[in-house]
Image 1: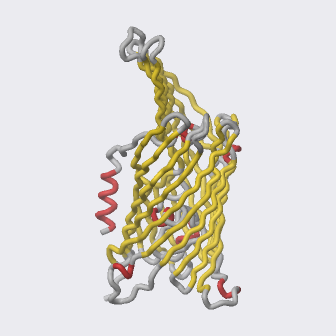
Image 2: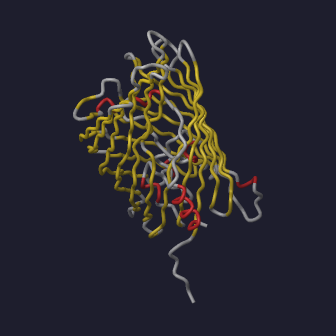
Image 3: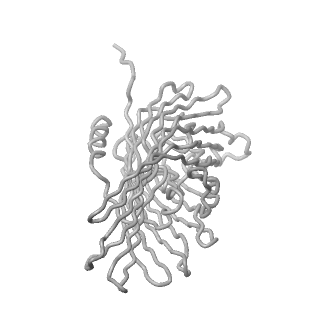
Length: 409
């Protein structure tokens, strides 16, 4: 099953991903931050740095891989339905995006060594702004942005003798961000023109994390059956980029090239999860990234501030026994989060509130179809600002098989 899935996914990558206009806020910095690609985590508020699960690949914290007992592959996609409004008008936009693919396989369960590799998005730029003018000529001014930053990673977890789990992975960041600005004189003798700037950042970074041993013995209650804390740090470093600038009209084309660097600040994430009676899990998480320190060609971005995210999640995971029905095996999730985004408009910070819910449907033993729905509110419809109400549908598939087991004869 996993081999067929890998081949099908690689073939899918050869086709372009459909994308329509998204958030206008992504025109600032390097776009929206994508904390997690997983539909599982989306259903619980979007983080989960302290979570270790034998059926889940945690991309926020490599230490979370140590419980994985079989070779796993996960991938997914999401669809955004976004309702945008200001004090004068409103609109609807939709976009569908690939949200990542990861793979992990256990090397030594005794020492908690699990290797993992994957391709996941980091930021997303997707917007389109159109202004129509009728005087003195009929013309349109259109600004668009697309692309984002992604990473490929390779890493491993390791369990120390006293139960502390550590993990690290090397990250290769790359991307393609395109900004276009054009003026279209559709019914005039004036020349239409377009100005396009392309950035191709790339560079090496890393993610390092830990998860504590089970601390439930420190709490004098039988209700809490597991309690862990965890944290991770993501280092992005200085990403070099090539710049291509294209200015074109119906008669003239000009092309120029350049280079530069983007200095992305560290991201710190910490959290805790508590398991009650082996079936109910509560997750608390906090993420901080000082985007006010972002520099492009050593120039600070004045329209950015430090980003923070708080999330709270809940999961109900039934104890599956031989003979359990399909409905008795469904895992249920819900959560909420508050995000102080990195965006600043007219010296006013843009905040986001998100409510989530989701579930995992069993496909076969250890294999699930994961679904999550998120509803978020961001910004304001006051003059000079934009209000966004977004419904995001996340879908993912998680497969697990036993590989690399020596057969006995």
